[in-house]
Length: 136
Image (cartoon, rainbow, N blue to C red; front, side, top):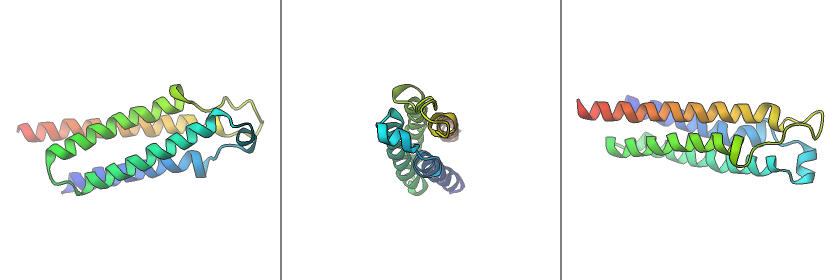
């Protein structure tokens, strides 16, 4: 029960941060919105990924079977890697040179990378914990 609550709440918080930071806390600057730059699409993709993390976190908190929780945790770990890839490789945020007050790349991409790394590390560690717990 304790593992379910901790990992479920962790996933929900990370999902809310992943969805909220590039869209509400550090939104895409006005200049990038007018030019329809790639940072808009990266923010939208991160929003979708964050919502997916929240839903999987809810499932993780309420799933009783260790096998199901192992699978959900593995999925969350890979989604954390996807979060990093969207921010850095697949879409990316602009380089911040479009406007002196641009907040797209200088702050958002590193934060998305941190959230992705946290998601991957926490949930891959949970996979190993659940597998070890099952085998003992």
